[in-house]
Amino acid sequence: MPDRHTSDQTVDQTPGQTPDPRAYVIVSPCRNEARHMRRTLDSVVAQTLRPALWVIVDDGSTDATPDILAEYAARHDWIRVVPKPDRGHRAVGPGVIEAFYAGLDTVNLDDFSYLCKLDLDLDLPAGYFAGLIERMQANPRVGTCSGKAYFRNGAGQMISEKIGDEMSVGASKFYSVDCFKQIGGFVREVMWDGIDCHKARQLGWIAVSWDDPELRFEHLRPMGSSQKGILTGRRRHGAGQYYMGSHPLYFIATAIRKMAHPPYVIGGLATLQGYFGAMLRGEKQHGDEELRRFIRAYQWQALLRGKARAVARIEAERAGQWRGPEQARKGQGRAGAAG
Image 1 (cartoon, rainbow, N blue to C red):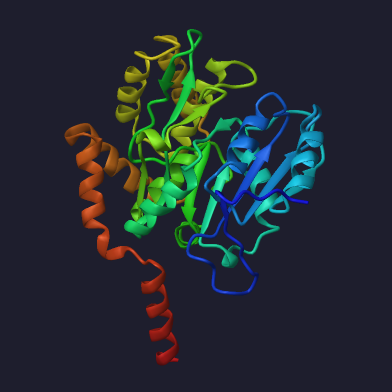
Image 2: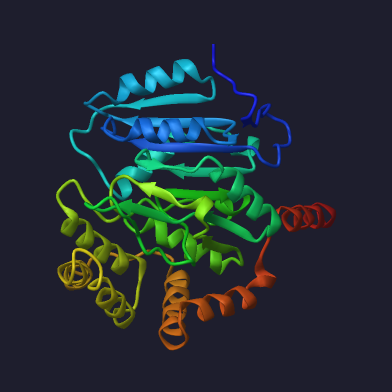
């Protein structure tokens, strides 16, 4: 019997009907997360507004992950587990997104107003999802958002992962379904979690993360880390920035800033190694040339004016291109009348 607490709310959604304006679905790819996942599972169960559905993709785990997932799915009828066969290793970037889509393919997005890609190494505050939805409903142009990620250092202090306000955090990507559909979803490459925000902004949406105390969450595994070490993660990030189309001068500036954060100096150098190594090898870049030009134009403005002013300028200039659900329905109506 699934437990229900009178202080909690779970949005129930009937398939085929107009979605409840607060109905959201979570899709979580995971592999060998037994060490951290109970904290994530418990923090979602404790949400003041719980998801209508949570699809968790077990991407070939070889630890206790399947047993833990079975335990929670048996207790909560809104948790669904999708198993995948073991590929023999943890995959990052495209592998994570492949697992995400293995879960999303079991979902009819038209049944929901919001979608979240959520990692299983986070500890969320109880009002997290309710808070995001409240902010998105107050400003319908917000297409993707998150709170801010923090990690605990060796002394037990909470340290910010320094995510820019113009990006939603990759570990907790919360989307309006309309925005997610318009950007074409996630690319299946490293830097999927940066490309999506730029594409949303290009189409007139707002991408944002808020550092309000009630939206801060703990990342139980530091951002940019890797199963092969944090420097491998930094090099991977640099290669991903090259794939995305970041301008070399802009990336050098960001790498210099990273040198002031752990791992000091060598972390920034590792990102440069990843970026220029990919460039020298002639690796492919994202195929949307117009988006690459848009990203570089933004980066130049960020260098000249600062990120906040550059983003504000783009949001003002692109407001007329935004097509929220009402605008999309009007456009469909005009097309139907013309036909």
